[in-house]
Image (cartoon, rainbow over all chains, first blue to last red; front, side, top):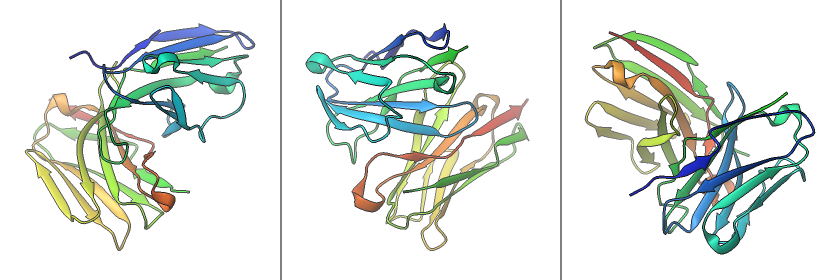
Length: 115
Length: 114
């Protein structure tokens, strides 16, 4: 069974540019999560999809971040325009049925560097 | 909201020694405590977890202990091997409002020297 995949693995952009990150969850997983880790700090929650609906987006830092999950399969996270403080590793995770009990499986992450 | 502190940030041991990583949490309502291992180039992977109705859990060379009164939990790795080298994250969830979203610690970089 394929795990969670993320694309690209690395992205280097200049301040003010736009970047779109993609996550493909494990097939059949309804729950999809986005997290971010700024260097040396904790992994922080951004948002949670159940199928195509946003269940919890309380962690989204501001309106420069837009997440979508059309059709309830893969998800994209767009940052527009990017700022220096957006640099970090963006992780996607997915889980099967019940968020409170089911294990979250993480992807390898996308390392975003904003210059 | 929940706050999780993790220590140490870096831990260097010799192969065969034991390693202990400690975490504290702030919200007494938290009831689920997973530990993740992140190897180079990979995402965090769940290695062991414990719920608040249990004080200790073991899985081969790794064990986790939980002290609800003191609000701290620890990861113990015995007979460390070079392949144990990775970044380890603790997390807590189930805090106020029953949130299932984990709050992570800052991570511990474990280095096991052959």
